[in-house]
Length: 456
Image 1 (cartoon, rainbow, N blue to C red):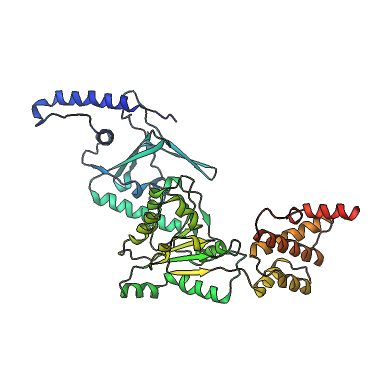
Image 2: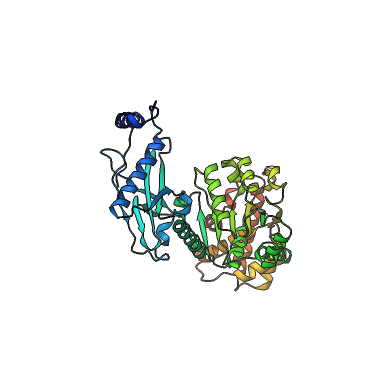
């Protein structure tokens, strides 16, 4: 793959020369001379159209019309070829748009997976559509890659039928998976199955609200009510609470319970900006009914303009008939801009995922520590008030390390009780500020210190 860089002056000089040639050849038919330099975007667009037209002439497709194809319409066409019955279609290279140039492809790498995006022409014979794609590099601080899509077909009917088939395929493949999105589709991460969470424990009140107001949001009778009341069929849900209490597990539960509703999980890259956010919102609404999850809303609103975020939510087209569910999480909701929660449709449902009470702590410990006596588990449940599920999981881990350090293959009651005391003590010190006391660190270090003390 060759990436070709042209300086702005070189491009301008070449276009000036070609503009002079055009004026000389068509002086008699031109009403007024061209003054100044032609815009580079215009030149690229018309050269691409001419290149595609030359291909059509070669393929005896003179009757096809050439028109611009918006990027979002067919960006993932390669994934759809088999579904479309076009599995034999392949990208064919076209001549360079610049004299002595060479067309370039582009490559993206996310989640350790590399993807090469070809340029050239793709003929979809069964759909009577020809697609053209060209890339170039905008030389700035980020060396951004730019793309232009053109399409050719006998009429708009053939292209629209292809577009609808691709949209249907997207919805089909989006079912039962999480779509990891970062902005534009070329930056997406790997999809993964919507497995049922094995560690979800909720109070009866929270579980009832989730079933009724999140999962039930997509029921047919609820959709009918929104239509009857002429209310935009969308809802914003904010899950808040201290880290480690199951916000992510709750989101997985909702996704698993709605396998036929496309679900997008926003995991933005470091250079995520307003344009990326706008593209994510557009893709979300296009898939309606659909779910969009934003984990750590506080972080996102430090990277993008709050007004832009709110305007995008408020501007979601009320004509969208499928439900749109936005789920966001926050560890510190008190730090969010007050405008976030002052209008229905942004975040009209707020659910606190609090630290587990004694009953839930005991249920968690019983599930994780099957070999420990009921008395020991009851004692630990009573001594861990204010700890999160993540802290309880640390008790499980640390008690196992104690048993390993002692050369045993199973935990004893004392291992669990001692681990609980260590975790609770460290949590209290952490609440007063860091650093925590060294002798209360998690892991094997305190065990070794205790052994040294015993020997002395």
